Image (cartoon, rainbow, N blue to C red):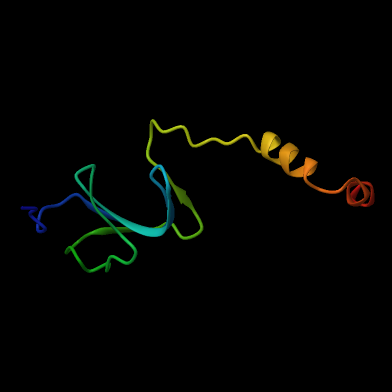
Length: 91
C-alpha cells in the first residue's frame, strides 16, 4: 500500500507519452522517483502537497529506450510510391 501522505510526490500532467509504444496524452504520478500510476487524467489533488508539472505539448519517454527514427528511409520509400509526373511538379 502506498502512503499518500508521504512527501516526494510529483504529478506530470498532459505529456505525450511513449513507453515504448505511443500512449497518447497521459498523466504520470511519481512517488520518490518511482512511477506509481499512468492514466489519461489523474486529478492534481490526488495527493496532498503534490508537486504538479505541466508538460502540455511536451514528449515524455523513459530512459534507456531507443526512441529515434530514420525519416529519410521512410520518406524515400514514400517518394517511390508517388507517380513520377507528380514528383516533377513537386520539385
